[in-house]
Length: 111
Image (cartoon, rainbow, N blue to C red):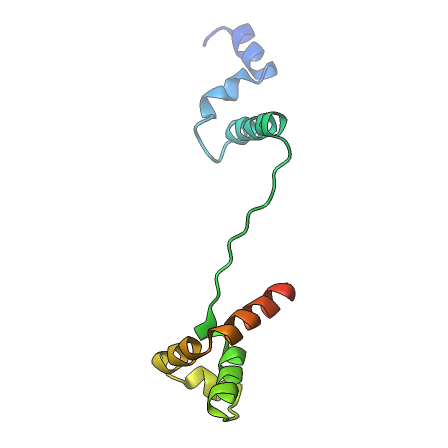
């Protein structure tokens, strides 16, 4: 390491940073990951997207309002829907899964 020509050669060839490949915050790490990604593109082709969505029916106050209106013939506000107990929300959802699925589909199409 005391030889200046050796150190300058490492710097100019970017070999001085190769020991940092394991450190996620180093440019050498991200350069290695970029090269791995490009190899995957070349070997496997263009990537496709895979998306998993799950419904959060108990958190959708609009759905609870609709379910209350359909199942109990009562009109409630969004605030009242938010203040319903978790058990009551689950009961409404269990009683009308078709409306829940249709509402989920509606929200999905609005994305």
